[in-house]
Length: 87
Image 1 (tube, rainbow, N blue to C red):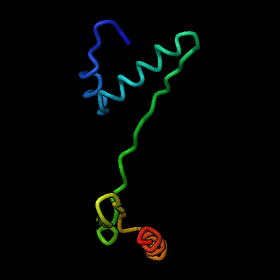
Image 2: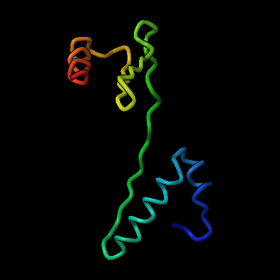
Image 3: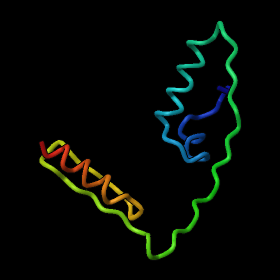
Image 4: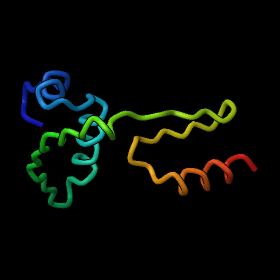
Protein backbone atom coordinates (compact mmCIF):
# COMPACT_ATOMS: atom_id res chain seq x y z
CA UNK A 1 0.00 0.00 0.00
CA UNK A 2 3.06 2.27 0.01
CA UNK A 3 3.21 4.95 -2.70
CA UNK A 4 5.27 3.78 -5.66
CA UNK A 5 5.17 0.11 -4.65
CA UNK A 6 4.59 -2.21 -7.59
CA UNK A 7 2.38 -5.20 -6.89
CA UNK A 8 4.33 -7.47 -9.24
CA UNK A 9 7.66 -6.64 -7.60
CA UNK A 10 6.26 -7.13 -4.08
CA UNK A 11 4.66 -10.43 -5.12
CA UNK A 12 7.90 -11.72 -6.62
CA UNK A 13 9.92 -10.64 -3.59
CA UNK A 14 7.60 -12.57 -1.25
CA UNK A 15 6.81 -15.48 -3.60
CA UNK A 16 3.04 -14.90 -3.73
CA UNK A 17 0.76 -14.51 -6.74
CA UNK A 18 0.03 -10.88 -7.70
CA UNK A 19 -3.72 -11.62 -7.70
CA UNK A 20 -3.49 -12.46 -4.00
CA UNK A 21 -1.92 -9.07 -3.28
CA UNK A 22 -4.61 -7.34 -5.32
CA UNK A 23 -7.23 -9.22 -3.26
CA UNK A 24 -5.60 -8.14 0.01
CA UNK A 25 -5.38 -4.52 -1.17
CA UNK A 26 -9.10 -4.60 -2.07
CA UNK A 27 -9.91 -5.94 1.40
CA UNK A 28 -7.91 -3.13 3.02
CA UNK A 29 -9.71 -0.49 0.95
CA UNK A 30 -13.11 -2.00 1.83
CA UNK A 31 -12.18 -2.07 5.51
CA UNK A 32 -11.09 1.58 5.56
CA UNK A 33 -13.53 2.30 8.39
CA UNK A 34 -12.13 -0.55 10.48
CA UNK A 35 -8.64 -1.14 11.76
CA UNK A 36 -6.82 -3.78 9.70
CA UNK A 37 -3.79 -5.60 11.03
CA UNK A 38 -1.39 -7.71 9.02
CA UNK A 39 0.70 -10.19 10.93
CA UNK A 40 4.17 -11.30 9.93
CA UNK A 41 4.37 -14.91 8.85
CA UNK A 42 7.43 -17.10 8.52
CA UNK A 43 7.21 -20.23 6.44
CA UNK A 44 9.42 -23.04 7.65
CA UNK A 45 11.30 -25.16 5.18
CA UNK A 46 9.52 -28.38 4.34
CA UNK A 47 10.91 -31.39 6.12
CA UNK A 48 12.57 -33.88 3.85
CA UNK A 49 10.66 -37.14 3.66
CA UNK A 50 12.47 -40.40 3.75
CA UNK A 51 12.82 -41.92 0.29
CA UNK A 52 10.47 -44.75 1.27
CA UNK A 53 7.45 -42.41 1.55
CA UNK A 54 8.17 -39.83 -1.15
CA UNK A 55 6.02 -39.48 -4.23
CA UNK A 56 2.41 -38.95 -5.09
CA UNK A 57 -0.21 -40.28 -7.47
CA UNK A 58 -3.10 -38.69 -9.27
CA UNK A 59 -6.19 -40.69 -10.17
CA UNK A 60 -8.62 -39.39 -12.79
CA UNK A 61 -12.16 -40.75 -12.68
CA UNK A 62 -13.85 -39.35 -15.76
CA UNK A 63 -13.47 -35.77 -16.92
CA UNK A 64 -14.50 -33.98 -13.73
CA UNK A 65 -13.02 -36.00 -10.87
CA UNK A 66 -9.37 -36.02 -9.91
CA UNK A 67 -7.96 -37.45 -6.67
CA UNK A 68 -4.37 -36.61 -5.75
CA UNK A 69 -2.67 -38.29 -2.79
CA UNK A 70 0.84 -38.66 -1.48
CA UNK A 71 2.57 -41.82 -0.37
CA UNK A 72 1.41 -41.37 3.23
CA UNK A 73 -2.29 -41.80 2.34
CA UNK A 74 -4.27 -44.30 4.35
CA UNK A 75 -5.10 -47.07 1.87
CA UNK A 76 -8.43 -48.00 3.45
CA UNK A 77 -9.59 -44.37 3.44
CA UNK A 78 -8.50 -43.94 -0.18
CA UNK A 79 -10.44 -47.07 -1.12
CA UNK A 80 -13.58 -45.69 0.52
CA UNK A 81 -13.20 -42.38 -1.32
CA UNK A 82 -12.73 -44.07 -4.72
CA UNK A 83 -15.70 -46.37 -4.13
CA UNK A 84 -17.88 -43.40 -3.12
CA UNK A 85 -16.85 -41.42 -6.20
CA UNK A 86 -17.52 -44.40 -8.46
CA UNK A 87 -21.20 -44.53 -7.53
